[in-house]
Length: 193
Image 1 (spheres, helix red, strand yellow):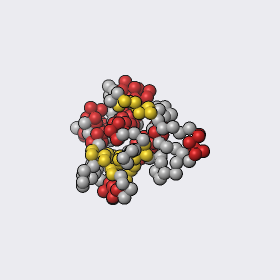
Image 2 (cartoon, rainbow, N blue to C red):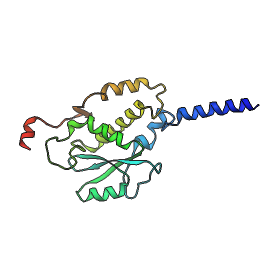
Image 3 (tube, rainbow, N blue to C red):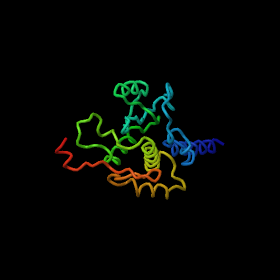
Image 4 (cartoon, rainbow, N blue to C red):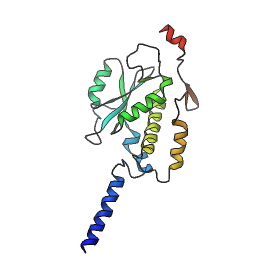
């Protein structure tokens, strides 16, 4: 009887260890979660999903958007408001730095490289809606690639995302039949800055 108990404990502990790093039980469940969808920032809507999670946010700068990370979304929104900007959307997650870094690399062509503007690597010249949708795609890609969520029958999805996102940089984004193109970051702009 004791051997059966030990074997059951062993099987159970292995199952826990195999799924301990998972942030969702399935891709389908993940796609319905706040980890993927995020949430609009409205007033004091700054609840953390887990106490140790931090925030990834998108701020509206009128003609551009800014991506950033913070541990305190309310405080950061007050700071950004001083510059006539406002945080419009946020995700609360354990991988906020990883997602921000990925977005900054893959969308680098949508920044103005040769400027003295503060946060120039975090400011993207795209409308906010396609930018938020792209951040969601980046989150899904990272969570699948790093196996934070189980791939299951979604290897084809990961392969498709990998084909588009595992490259140096994007040059255009299509949203609602409109194509948003990268910034003109030619060396001539560098000389003029």
